[in-house]
Amino acid sequence: MKDIPLTVKRSIELLGLVLIMTVIFLGSDIIMPLLMAFFVSIMLLPVYRFFKKYKFPDIISIVIPIVTLLIIVAGIIWFLSSQVAVLVDDFPQIKKNVNIHLDSLSYWINKTFNISSKEQIDFINEQSNKLLSSAGNILSGAVGSVSGFFLFFGLLPIYIYLFLFYKNLFLRFIFMWFKNDSHEQVKESLKATETIIKSYLIGLLIQVTYMTILLGGILMLIGIKHALLIGVIFALLNLIPYIGALFGNIIGVLLTLTSSEELWPVITVLLVIAAVQFLDNNILMPKIVGSKVKINALSAILGVIIGGTLAGISGMFLALPIIAVLKIIFDRSEMFKHWGVLLGDEKPEKSPMNVKNPQTLGD
Image 1 (spheres, rainbow, N blue to C red):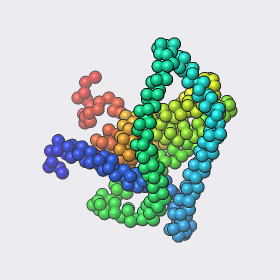
Image 2: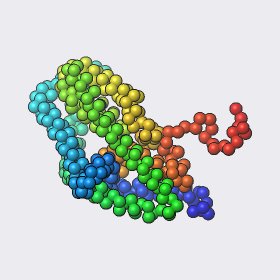
Image 3: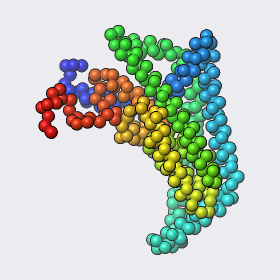
Image 4: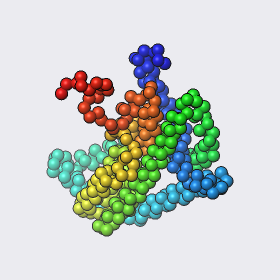
């Protein structure tokens, strides 16, 4: 590789990047559950090692953390379904509130843009007809999505079990991939990868917990209806960097509008969300995972967008952990060190050039 011209090396790197993205796009149904299971299995490693320390058999040491995780997920699903049931019970009032807000919006459009109510209704009917014309495709796609969802989460426990059960086999494969004189560096990279993934994922769980308690609790004290549901939805969507918070705000506003005839609760919800998010972004989250994941904002945003384009919602959720792991690998490889610099947030203080004799630089 040393004799290959630099332009050829960079071209091979870019072609490899395109190939990887193509493989993820074409095989996302297979790759995403495996990646999700890989990250979750690393998060469960401390529990597995705890039981192994006390001489529990492998099967029991693996099954206990997986069952505990499934119970927690089932509890979250039960809570969300119970909150949705409350929404369904309130449907007559929601319908009434929506009509009030639509009438107010129609009046404002009429006064501001001089568009009559009849023209607005004609426009809505036209768009509704277009939507209904493609209803068949939407429903067929939804059926496929639901089946894919159950397949995804049905395979996850199996994959997690197999990752933990064959952990040493995978480690041996990784070490055999490299020469003996590189094994110490590989070992260090593996430890760093495990540490950063555990710190990041456990930090996200802590973030979801305190965001739900803070946001839901404050809104409940103020008297906002569906406060806990708004808190949980925003906390879960906030796991998607940058983009998730925007959708969380939108859903919070919509839920508030459907439960109130006035606008002050909407303003209250937006202000509370902004305050909690400021506290999360500037104080709490940097203390939990910010010091572990050194990724610049541009790489994070592009990673989330590319991940969503290639693999949907699961790609958006996994974007940051994947970028963090790649940065660890790149930083410890002379061949790809420049990619690690591109992903990181370490800005050169004076000059971006690595000059051995700084005295040659002008002021």
